[in-house]
Length: 355
Image (cartoon, rainbow, N blue to C red; front, side, top):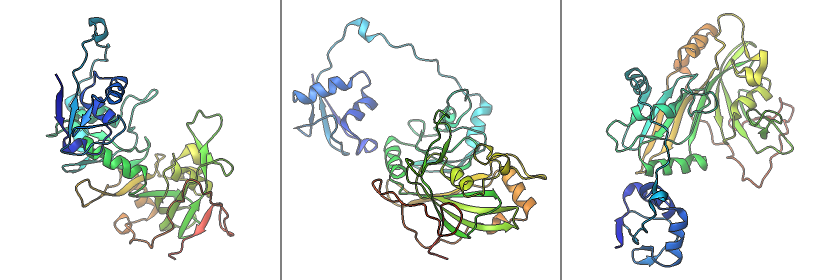
């Protein structure tokens, strides 16, 4: 006998095949496609395909599911789920700086990876069970920060919010502001760094570099907050595109590596004296639209080592949130390749129109 399902708000806008993957995990994509081809799958009485999108309140009619042989129904051996300790739960919840219907925001500490990987066992993804609170499901990651980068990390609390936020990050309809301490300082107080980035050969995709021949367009805006003569600078960084390690590559390529970023800056990225050798790159602020309207605008406080470095260099973080700049040209379309001509400045560094 056919079953009917009313599409919930959390499933608004998702594809039919994704709905099955979310709610009827025993139904394969091939089965959904077969139902669609034969007209057995109906949405509000009309035929529907696996790639069609659903809307809240629509009624999806699903035909009877064929009974499979017992052998085919044998569950796969899943890895046992690791229970979090009280200390891990307390730690995860201590990172929360914003909590609302659609979103959780963490202030991720440096040294904690966003997701697991080779030889990475401690990560935010492994702590998500501690961040469910009163929601029906645990939150979902919608973007990431490098392991050694601290600051604002957004989590979606519903499937609908995850799809909504994911689309905004993919289309770069967000505003992300980073703070950094650099060795030396940008040549200009307000500059646009326009240097294409690609994977560095021989690194297995683990390291990026400026590649003006085949790299993807990458643009960043650097605004100097303060300088410590020629020794260091306190810099606001805004990525206008979303390439891997973009800010780190651009900072190093323009001769002012981020302090503590030995991967891209080498020994030049480490300052003498009592300055920490940890990475000094912090996701300070995120501005993003919310699914039901309105805007989330959240800031994350600095980690201890970063704050101590600012004090050591005579920088004042209390006056570091710069006023809104004049708009700059947004990221170019994929088909367009911009020149990285420097007009007499450092490599790839152009003067902003706002100063």
